[in-house]
Amino acid sequence: MQSRREFIANSSRVAAAIAATGSAASPLTGCGRYAAIPAVMPASFHDVSGSRSLRANAARHGLVFGSAVIIHNVQTDPDFAELIAEQCGIVVPTNELKWVALRPAPDRYDFSRPDFLLSFAESHRMLMRGHNLCWHESVPAWIQTPENRPRARQFFIDHITTVCSHYAGKLQSWDVVNEAINPGDGQPGGLRKSFWFEQIGPDYIDLAFRTARAADPHARLTYNDYGVEYDNANNTEKRRLILELLRGMRQREVPIDALGIQSHIKAAQPDKIGKGLADFIEAIRQMGLEVYLTEMDVNEDDIAADDPVKRDSIVAQTYADYLRIALASPAVKLVLTWDLSDRFTWLDSGPTHHRKQPNRPQRSLPFDRDYRPKDAFFAIRNSFDNRPEL
Ligand code: XIL
Image (cartoon, rainbow, N blue to C red):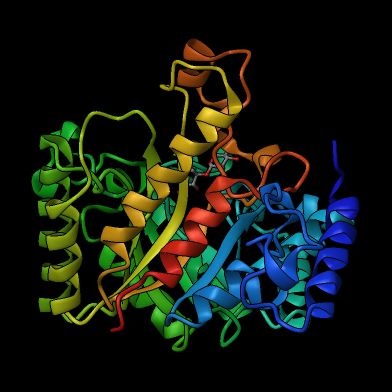
């Protein structure tokens, strides 16, 4: 197995060999003056860095590409840090800005890890976004005690004000409210019966956005959700409810700049991605909002075959099909995967995965567990390159 360092060394040798032929135009043809270069090279020998990175290819097509990262991994694994700096134009902390991580006690904030990531991002000329200020998960136990519960609204305002002020002017965007719609809860507008909904009331969403804008006028304020990608009944209903929510916010002059579509998609999924998503993105564009693909990955635990070659090819095709629809709209400005390497994917810890494929680590992301690029990398990069001129 080739390690990442060997891969980089090999890539540079190949690049040098290509340069020696006098042209990098078509290094893989294996004929004529390229005869010195093997006709068929494994994908891992392609040059995937510098001008051929996801970051650079995205930038050439009006996009910023990036990834969620578990900050500890950047701090402790230099190869991973290098991979992130090479491939990403933007990063987002996976968990470290969520309430439970950031606010261990009512009077204590721990900004150390996200501050580290911000300086790492700045030193590599990457942007950073924030995730998230408000979610039904990651609600600390201390706020749910009988004595603190009634003070939830004040804690909420203080939290958003403190966190947004801490990073004011430094973040590209904030996921202000995450996953607020869940029609199954039977509330008006399909609002989820979260802790915040129950303690503050349905206007907690407006309150979050207004408070965030007051503390940081520069970050693009985003509503982020999942379950809107497919042409099926559930996703259609969720799209309708999100549009209703966002239109209402617009009417009430609540400050909002973007919709985040999480983009957790599935391989081997019978439902299609097509007109529903395209029309949805167009409706968001017409409202004057940007669209960010915030947490893209491909869950492949429905693929029956174990063969990694086959799985990689299906995963890659799933990315290609999704991005062909999503990137057709000029409203889409950011594309982030939910981590960059299979080594750190959250999908391996999901209950569904344990039921379906307990012994099979997911091959969901552009880079494998040893940080080598997979078919998914090339599919995503091609999708950027094939983006229609906008
Ligand atoms: C996930 C993280 O990846 C996990 O490490 C954590 O245990 C739970 O949260 N939608 C979101 C993200 O908005 O915050 C979630 O991240 C994945 C689903």
